[in-house]
Image (tube, rainbow, N blue to C red; front, side, top):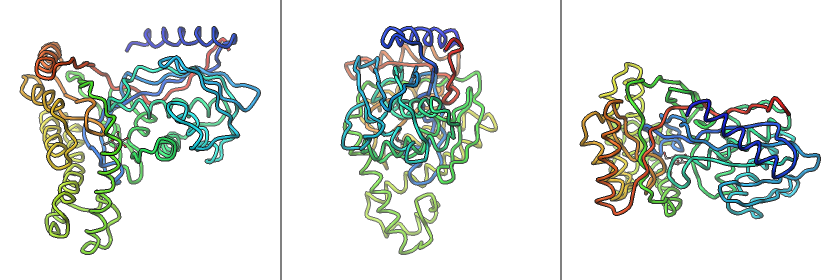
Length: 395
Ligand code: GLA
């Protein structure tokens, strides 16, 4: 997206804000969605992930109020909500207002005194597609509330507050990847994140390769239970492995060799889940090395291996996703392709040589529609910067 586009959105949202509340907004916030290039379900196992923030985001325009109310208009839903800062509790909120209430609640608990505000919320991250529209909303709202109250933004803390919101207000036991990349993304880079200490390393993406995201348009409604179940299976693997490896804290601490050596301790299903996580961690580190060397062939091969592991050992794929991945992997100019995000629907991510992108979009789109019976949406993405709050000069 060009800066021209961003400016247009900013102006339009400011105008709408003015129409709604008859005063101009004072700040504009953009927090991106993300695509994960490799490293699935490793984050809550304190392992490694390699996502990129994308040029689709949640947007907020806002202005402080004199009272302790958050008055919010969600443009995509065309709905209003009022949230009292002094009456925050997870039981009181459902649907999209829960994200806002959760952020306000946990920022407050982290010691940030907040002020009331009028907020207009918009976004262009497809929802329920595995591109982290929720994390983008959390990070955008959190950064806005901090800015309006005059607090500096600690990006790691902002991500943690987003994760607490997911756990407590949304009841999804998500890891930290989505919020961290939305807070800390870097344009034209992927970010290697160590989810144990939250250290990050930006790795440049090659300009002759595009990130192409294919949305299966299979919503991830069933995914929440699957996600939480996988998380429990990983914890169970650690519990059982501790009889032989007492010092391990999470699957991050187990090498592929150790898992193989102690595989008899685990029931077959738990072994498969653990094998995905343990080998995936190794693949993320290898793929980061490949990216540093600019070796996109190797990177793509690791993406394909990661997909096979996600499908066979973690059992998080679906037949519609397989259509997208096999169509992509068979095309010339495609380095790698895999299911991205939490699993059971959503999107695939493919790395495609610039000159092959057009052919990719038409061929994969046609195969998908023919075999599945509905259309996929295809987005050619660029890697974007993390959350940004800018004041309106005129305010
Ligand atoms: C979802 C979660 C993340 C991560 C991925 C799987 O996106 O929010 O924390 O666990 O699934 O890699």
